[in-house]
Length: 574
Image 1 (cartoon, one colour):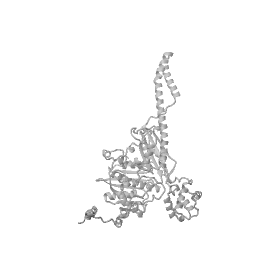
Image 2 (cartoon, rainbow, N blue to C red; image 1 turned 45 degrees about the vertical axis):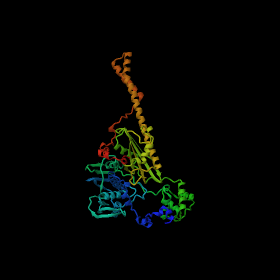
Image 3 (tube, rainbow, N blue to C red; image 1 turned 45 degrees about the horizontal axis):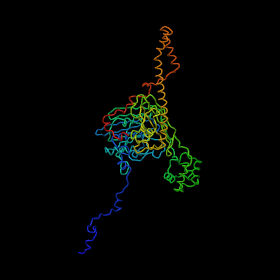
């Protein structure tokens, strides 16, 4: 053996097993399309189904929202029946029936058993639903937790049969699976009924089904809701008005809200002869003069065909739009509640000594018009300890979860409430006997997630909320200052009135008049006091003054059990 054998490197002495290299073709075989239904099947928490209690509320919320939208669009005063049946083992049967216009037969499977299918996603007008996910996601959740199909009955009018379906969702294809399809007799002129079996947990409290339906009745005074809870107790929320809300119109997108990619897509799909007509007919608030101004700044001839617009030309169009003064979008696409009805609803829920409300002028974010409304109640029977109560609404729908992640909460916290008579630490919610209600009405509410539980933090929205809150705060400050002045005046009068008899007695000793004259002197001094000091307004709280307040109504959903307190989680506390 030569010496070279001892000089070989160590790695040559030992042979290590080598792995077969991973081939790209093998990886490619594992890749496949993911259906939107499959995605949400695994990520149902994104849609509000992250715990059993919340899943129960989300299912009822989505069905009730759809019923209200259908009735409002058809000019029908809504009558909605919500029934929850406890089937044991944390399973419930949810039934929601309305008197809406009904659904044509061909559309029923797609509406209830296909995610991202609906009429509102591409429509720029105010509505409760937006994405075409909600009710079909509820059907999917029921299917996942109980294995049972959803049951839908719908009728479009007298003389038409009622169509009955039992539906499931094929989550791999995001398509409806029809288990049963038949016609049946239904003693109703028109309407829709859906029944879903699902796993859930029923508890009362601030995030309960009871609280949601109560707040829905407050914010939708034209609606009648008949509710039967799992205990068999029937609660009726009667309508407070016979007047239907204003029906918002659909509008075209506003140029300020269009981004480059969207503009290029619109140009590619447009059938207009030239770019000037495209601007006038595809956008709101763009007339002939405004279109000419935009094209002149973009150095694009008005007669240029839309198909000839390149990416660079489209980018010049975007820059020109941003540098052109264009009127704000029309506001007939939104339907605010109104300060008067907002305050009336708050009075029904809260027995306070002072109320104020405001509807702000319309504003715009990303080209979408919106209106902020707010109301405030102070004093009375409200608890002085702890943070103020914040009631949040969006397009007439209560928001019960994710308060800490909401733009409303940030706006209230960043408003300085100390000059208005409330205590506050840093940017936290103020402390005191106060309830604040905030509502946004918009063609597209910017929620933080598909579950629609909190409002995104757009600067334009936060600015409008703060302006509304400051207006409420100034009204509150006037009342608190007035109450303080009245209290000071009553104290001063008390001191004077205390010494009037002593003054009259001293005068009697000096002037030697009779007891009758002493009594007359006391009365005269009291008259002089009233005349010189003026009449004092009575600001003492009187529980009977608020004729709108309904104690039984106010207590719905507020009885919290020990079980609920034990089950509370950080997410529920938000």
